[in-house]
Length: 275
Ligand SMILES: O=C1O[C@H](COP(=O)(O)O)[C@@H](O)[C@H](O)[C@H]1O
Image (tube, rainbow, N blue to C red; front, side, top):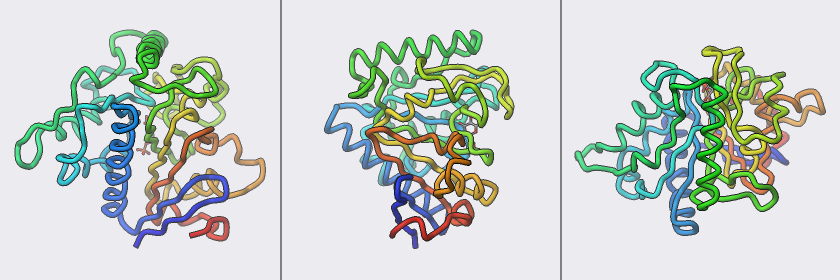
């Protein structure tokens, strides 16, 4: 049985007994949002990351979602990407392609589920990290102009319908690492780093203003190795943990949801949220 709770100011918590249960809930959540924004805007702009999140999205490629989701209206982006070739084992694009997109094309019944290839916005992997970030931001600016991606009501930032993030045991989200100057970036939408503490070193990443302008942000975090970071990111602990990247995810006009398994949620102070 999943525990659905709301934390005072850190969003909704969905704590699951098993990864299978979490994956079903995540697929339901994404499919529901896809339908909502399809009706509201005619398209669904979703940004993914890499890591363990992608295998947890796998159920979307299976029944009933493979038939109910209107894949042709999806526009897919990356909230962070490693600056490596698209066929490199470290590429977040490759992870999504192998673990999700390629499966979305061929279903159990061998019927096509058409994610339109031109709606898949991967980075240019043949230029420097700086150029790749600039090019990615340029593409985004064109898509915001045409409102394929919405725009924030309070800044010129893109307003993604959904940004799906994982979190590392150090509390990093996308490629925003603890104590890194990238956390202070306020002007750019997409920036780059060349000194990631987690390999590979060169990455591009959405900045916090872009993440926090989204209509919906989901943090999908599993495993006991992340329990301490989950505690620091969610519980009320005074000012000490405010600079943890995951804690800096605070959608201004959007909704934040945490998908956790029990080991990841094991250090949460239950008194701070209501069921
Ligand atoms: O390096 C990265 O790590 C995070 C977390 O990955 P996980 O495997 O611990 O879930 C991921 O969200 C990010 O996209 C990736 O570049």
